[in-house]
Length: 260
Ligand SMILES: [Zn+2]
Image (tube, rainbow, N blue to C red; front, side, top):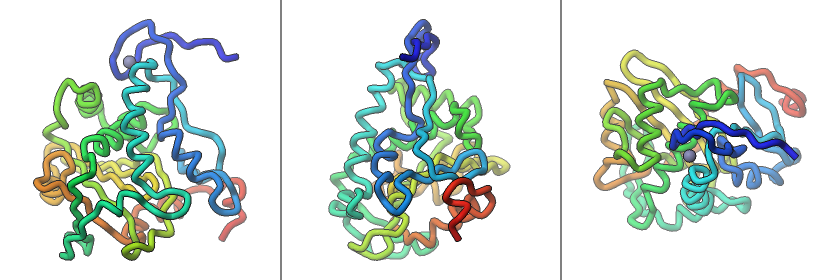
């Protein structure tokens, strides 16, 4: 049995807590991806390497109260994203607005989605990854890490100089997507006055922007402030522009090295 690790919880900042071995990306994602395809283990993109692995990315950073705090949002998102049978319960609630949005994405509206839970889920994965040694491609900077920490604790609203656009991948209405079970840890792209942070979890893609000069498109479609709150539906080829370079630039290990 592993001995307990006592320290300061990264979220509530209380000292002397027993720190849990917390998943950076929710535990349910590993369970869901496993069992699909020939290799039953999920693809993990980490440290510039792609490897199919059963290893789960964990960090000792949260006390048990804070870990449970995240659990509510995690189980909600688990229930609406792509399942192992290829269906996404979220799409049953969607009203397609049938107008082309930015870059050919189709805005969709749903009155019954719990947007706040979805936003908190994406933010919590981003914030945990910022602190994780296993997610070197993700960095919020000290100021935004602190603002997101306080937002996740319900001390403040969603930070003013941040935005989050929600995207769902669907190749044809009712036909799912070939990347339905794909998951990534967040990837930060640094620009002059604005950083973007992307992550994908079983069809759901979060695009965060943080900084002084957030592009209008992010503000307009922000999950925290948009009115009405919209989600963008895109085909998988539109997501591959950022996922593909991760695969092309990385060293493939294990069974992936033998795949074309
Ligand atoms: Zn705590």
